[in-house]
Length: 367
Ligand SMILES: NC(=O)c1ccc[n+]([C@@H]2O[C@H](COP(=O)([O-])OP(=O)(O)OC[C@H]3O[C@@H](n4cnc5c(N)ncnc54)[C@H](O)[C@@H]3O)[C@@H](O)[C@H]2O)c1
Image 1 (cartoon, rainbow, N blue to C red):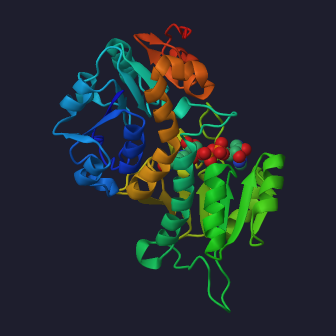
Image 2 (image 1 turned 90 degrees about the vertical axis):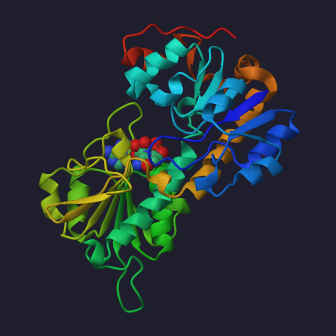
Image 3 (image 1 turned 135 degrees about the vertical axis):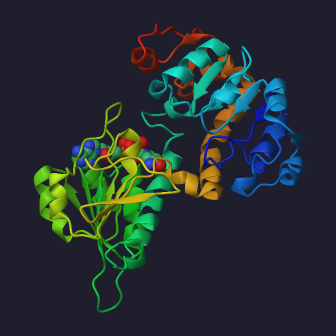
């Protein structure tokens, strides 16, 4: 199959959808890979490394789209890319269509096959979202630690303390993928960590695997209010699938929090789990409300493209190979994980939540 890798052009997106290592694998399977020049630059891969792996470099996105049967991307297509998409072309990327009516209609009009990373499902987990949650969870502590420094506006406290000085107190709300990785990094830095979740089985699991400086607690308004006055860094990492994040810390509760405390709201992409959160960017990541710092960047992994690209492509490559080897119809028939990723097929919406979001008909995919 002919596979195209365009350069990501969405603002501040530095990842690339295929590494030279992934290129090598696809070429080994007999496929042809076209990479737009400089596509991997911000993730640490130059054109030469793709050529060595067997790819052909094209000077423009237009040529990549024109030549490829399957386009692998990271972010959803933006307006300038819509016209490049061809009928029957397979697009394998993040789409988040239910949040974007204009994009949904553009994809319907394109008559392409849109296979969305975020809805590929395996054993009731979302394997192409997990790597980004892992990155964001780990980053939440790195960023939180930075903004706890006095010159950044924070309390001026070192996460791990030093011998003779107590470490910082970190509260992680939500013990899923993001929360687990946040807690591991915070605990590894020597902080005292509390994870709250509403799932008792999850808390049991976490208490078995976490080091001794991590406590688990049932998440409730009462417990959160009790613990807030002694916290230094609070990470919001809750998710209720398909719903807006609940406001676990309201504006009124901010008065329980000491000034200079840092709130990192990773769940901001689902509306945020602090009432006072609003989305920020890597250019201006923080703001302060009642003396409490808020870090609410909606695409945290974008700050570490070298890591994020490798983490994402580790997860996408096996599916990309399957799609290239068999074609999308046979691959989706063989692999139900991939079938769950079909959102729009040749002008028809095939994913119920997308159809529901915009009052459109949902068609069944016949393979
Ligand atoms: N900002 C970013 O760059 C970025 C990156 C990756 C993920 N995210 C977001 O981070 C959030 C968490 O993702 P995840 O992959 O860890 O999800 P997950 O499903 O693995 O974990 C969510 C956890 O929240 C728990 N939970 C639900 N309600 C709760 C409550 N009231 N109190 C405490 N815990 C509660 C659930 O039991 C679950 O364990 C999502 O909103 C996701 O979209 C953001």
